[in-house]
Image 1 (cartoon, protein in one colour):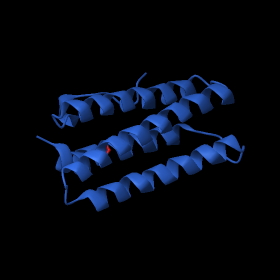
Image 2 (tube, protein in one colour):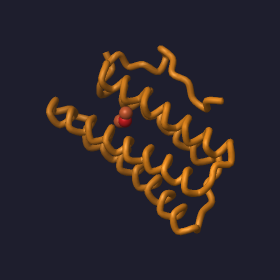
Image 3 (cartoon, helix red, strand yellow):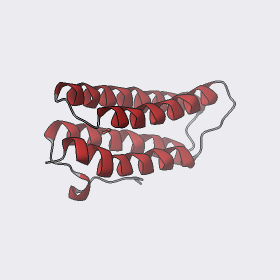
Length: 128
Ligand code: FEO
């Protein structure tokens, strides 16, 4: 069962950014499903890696665009991305080294952060 669903309320009406956000939602759901189904460490690790890789790709896309468009809120927006990336990469490292066994809290944290970030920061930067 999905932990997060796309709806028009979350759309910022920028085709590229919305498409990437939908893909992130899908990856968060994949992680949540893998955890709910008690998948093994290797599978869970791969799903988490895929989610983090795509998150970095998405953040780079937005940052490049903000720079090209001389967006005044670039520094603050990038700082939000950097803080989130640092947190999830730390969780990824802890998971890989066996210091942390992933729980549903991870997908819940990612979902909550992403929804709030889209509705506030992304909407301000790219909303139409
Ligand atoms: Fe869609 Fe600023 O992340």
